[in-house]
Amino acid sequence: MAWILVAVAGLLEVAWALGLKASAGFTRPIPSVLTVIAMVASFYLLAQAMKVLPVGTAYAVWVGIGAVGTVLMGMLIYGDSASPLRLLSLVLILAGLVGLKLAG
Image 1 (cartoon, rainbow, N blue to C red):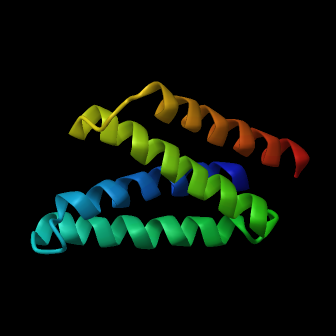
Image 2: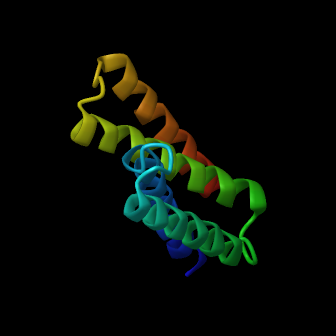
């Protein structure tokens, strides 16, 4: 169950990272409020998961999900570069996350 919390927290991290852009520096009220809600929910779920998971592994997986998800969504939504080097870098991040989970 704790890993599910980390996964959902990571997806919420993607939401709030994208929300930061959509809020235009917290000048747009609705995206700003939704961003803050996603932030709070993401941190809360991560904190709950850390009650039973190793702190370093849980945090790294949370950050990794957020980073990879945000880069992918940036490519899809905002047309960010999808160069081979960026894609390879994402694969390496994922490999590191899998390694941490298997070692933990």
